[in-house]
Length: 295
Ligand SMILES: NC(=O)c1ccc[n+]([C@@H]2O[C@H](COP(=O)([O-])OP(=O)(O)OC[C@H]3O[C@@H](n4cnc5c(N)ncnc54)[C@H](OP(=O)(O)O)[C@@H]3O)[C@@H](O)[C@H]2O)c1
Image (tube, rainbow, N blue to C red; front, top):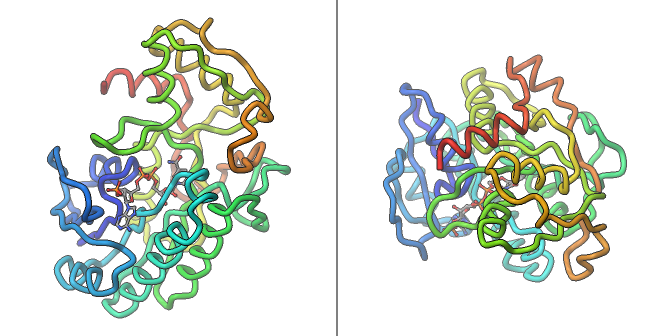
């Protein structure tokens, strides 16, 4: 099976390459402004997802049976402040990728987000109505609609808060940020009234491959096992990496008024993932243990 991964240098893009079965022929694109400093499993080409000409050339090269569209601007705060640019990539890029899937006859797996929910009624199932409270979440809803109606079989994957080791020079995640700060003996203020079910990027990638292999369509919520506050998450990170938990201070989300609004608790009901994909959510302690071992 030939699979094209957009955002192949991203956290999930790298994890997808790591978790792909030997039966997959992988093709990836990365943003043209970057330089690849480390080998990746997929054959790679630079291409901007917002550029139709670039993307048609990529599809002609990769001839994908399936496209996993993971390229996006993923920073909620960047999205809030840079709306036109984020719209162009997260909605415009999805429009281009979806149109190419239709023209070249490829199935689409669109990587969405838990940010489609307002966080007031966890645990969210795939049947719950969307209700985003920030611009990033609004764009994910728009891009889901474009994907679902583009005329090819489509699965929409909503991962929750991802963690793992990123590709060199890619953006970090909460775990890498805390590990770096605690190793440097820096005090960390972490909110204790926002909750999630943190998800190892590798486990998310494994779920995406199940969706691809089982030819699934429709919406899938993917999350880890433990329902924790971000403060509890940070304490688990300190314990797993043997760092000083006394440096972690609990604060309410009002401590960070400059940030874009965050839903309080978008944690997922993972029963569909368990039932249809045959996967058990990964406990936080084992995901962090694995990450430490992979360092
Ligand atoms: N991380 C999370 O906690 C999380 C949670 C829920 C959903 N998601 C979603 O999951 C997907 C993957 O997330 P991630 O954390 O792996 O993202 P990431 O690490 O930020 O990577 C995003 C990737 O997209 C690429 N990209 C950005 N703009 C592009 C463009 N115009 N053309 C081509 N490539 C472009 C980036 O390339 P450069 O870096 O070279 O620019 C990078 O490879 C995203 O859709 C994100 O919204 C993430």
